[in-house]
Structures are given as structure tokens and as C-alpha cells.
Length: 189
View 1 (tube, rainbow, N blue to C red):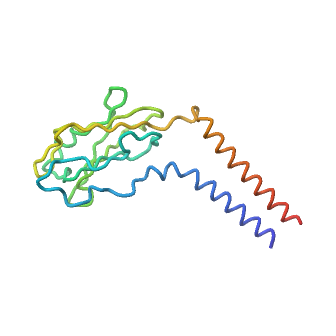
View 2 (view 1 turned 30 degrees about the vertical axis):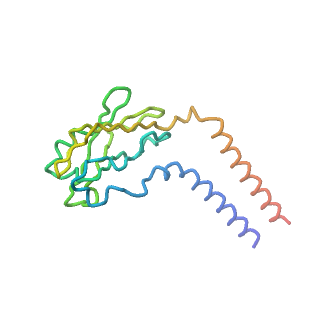
View 3 (view 1 turned 60 degrees about the vertical axis):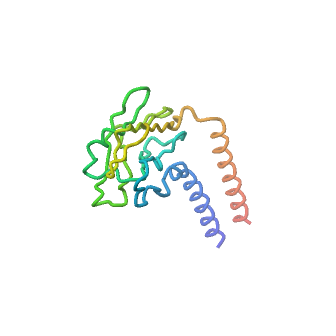
């Protein structure tokens, strides 16, 4: 009975430690897309959200990048123009990326979202800029009234981990060791 309790406790501790290591990845997952409304007829074309958000820091290198708007910007009537209106930049140079506009007839929930799939992973500890120029057009003929820039910075590399990060990991290891020691003592009684 004591052996089963020890195994269960160790399994739970290891599971918690494993799940906590995924929290930075899960934090970058978007919860919802505000662009899923039916569009704002007779209103200006505007950015409703972006992933990552403007000013975001510690963005993972494999984060899916997207910009969402309040009107349909992916229809075949505006596709060619809009593929050229969205770009990704790093250090003053355009990053090689595919601009992906879903087919609004096949994926109607994505009619306001443009995805940016960089061909190479983002580099650590770099500032990137998503630029959307005023040629972006909706199916209603609306254009962006002014260019949009979304700035974000990627996560620092493992070699530049801060002292705080090391302290947190050390504390978790010490707490786990204490719990294992207590459980081991109880088991041997």
C-alpha cells in the first residue's frame, strides 16, 4: 500500500513538473479570434487582433503569426493585392515568408485572418515587425486608412537565461526533492 502511494505521489510530481515546462508554449496559443463577426459594413477596415500582440516579448520561435481584421480580406477578389500588403521584417530586411489567406468559401471562419508562415524559424532575442500597408483591401472595397506595424521580440536563447529563471528551476527541484524525501521516510516506517 505504501509502495503504491509513493509511486502515485512521484507520478503526480513529475506530471506537474512536465506540465509546467509547457506553460510558455500554451501561453502563446490564441484563445479566440475577434474577427469572426460578420464584418463591419460601412465602417473603416481595421485591425482587430494579432498573434503575437503588438509589444509582445518572449515570443516562441515557432509561434503561428497572424493578423485579423473586421472585414473579409481573404476573398479571391482581393487575394492577390492582400498577399502583397502584409510583410514580416527583421533588422530592416524583409523576412522570407508565405502570406496565407484561407479560401473564405472553404474556411468561412477565417475570412478576416491572414497568416504569416516564415520559411525559417524566427531567431532568438530579435525584434520583428509585421507590416500591413494601406493597399490591404476588404471585399467591400475598404482600405486601411493608415499603415499598421506590430512589433514583437522573440524569446532569449538558453545561453542568456536570467538569474530569476535559474532560481525558479532550482526552487522547483529542491521542493520536489523534499517531497520525495518525506514520502520515502514515510514509506520506510
